[in-house]
Length: 373
Image 1 (cartoon, rainbow, N blue to C red):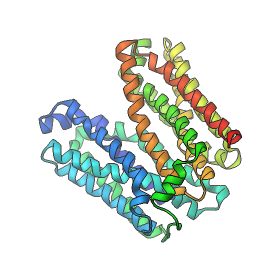
Image 2 (tube, rainbow, N blue to C red):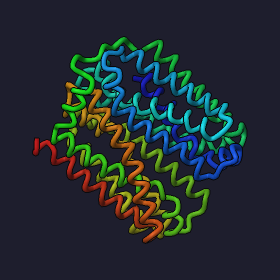
Image 3 (cartoon, helix red, strand yellow):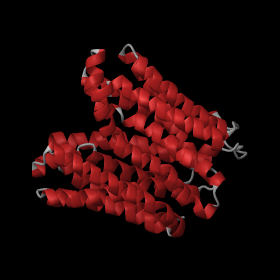
Image 4 (tube, rainbow, N blue to C red):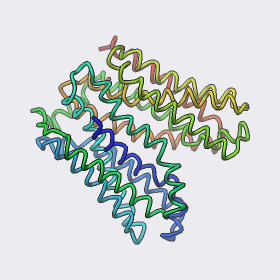
């Protein structure tokens, strides 16, 4: 489990590094900040396709070799970024990272299921997803700090080094895993024909897009409502990150013991945090309370929804994990786009209200699926 969590940490950290390094990348490559920002877009696009298709393209490959190969791909991606002479090479390298990210995360659920008893899957996914939580908290401030010391290429070299450590741990600990018979395109089609799975994917889209519609623009929202300064905002993000980690830690045991409680609790707390921030954001103290709720709620969601997918389609773990990860990546783009329209056309804080309500609706849909099935 630790090797999977470390692999996810290394890849997700690399995914988020450009957020703190875009001005330096743009200046060095003589491109606009918007053009440099496409390094994030192409990564998300490739991750969505990779998560969906990795089990189809490699239906019979030893999963140990696949996971190690994807981590190696992340190392190659970061090294190509370090050496990139222009934007085109940089974008190609980030496409490789997207393939590694989507494929690794999609297969992590199935790998975890091979390593633990069924009633401990939620706890195992907590270990895996803790890598996401730590990377989310660490990547942006780490990149900003080290970018001043080493330059942006040096930061990506560090990313390659972290992935190399993950690769070594995986090579030493991951067992050989033969995929279940009947995988591939037919199994993916079976999953996508399930009305319960489709309804669940729609609910997950609502929850994640609701979150990212607000979180993408949390800084302009907080500044417009309270006038919070840069230092206090950094502390606000730290509070969000710590709460996110706590939510991740609780999600696994809850997913094993009372899965429907988790499906309702975490998205509702997330939505409540966003709504509290919208309604009381004029107070800096209230902002911190809202960030605590919001971060805790979002922290528990990846483990909760992946556990739901594993229970819903236990015979097709790779496929259902893949479509969930794909939907999550699509939701990032949808949430950011909708939130951007609301910020530009209405007000900076409105995505908080809309995103919070949408996330709560997603929770209600998720908790109703067992009755429908």
